Image (cartoon, rainbow, N blue to C red):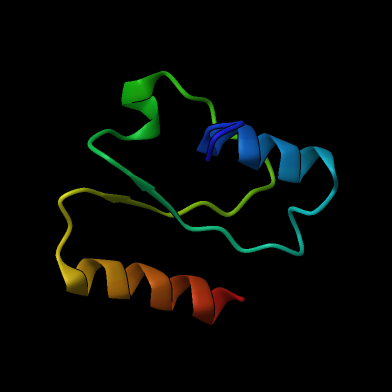
Length: 69
């Protein structure tokens, strides 16, 4: 995304009151939020998959998000 990173996008979703209406799935390149020093916005449902990930791990995370929708 040219104008913001993923965490900024999540903050914007929360700030606009869309957290309850939008499901998110975030893929990080090599680190967990804690390793990057990120504090995740409250009220957002965020799933993480670390690269490299196996296709089954990605599918399991996506199915979890879809099941919870």
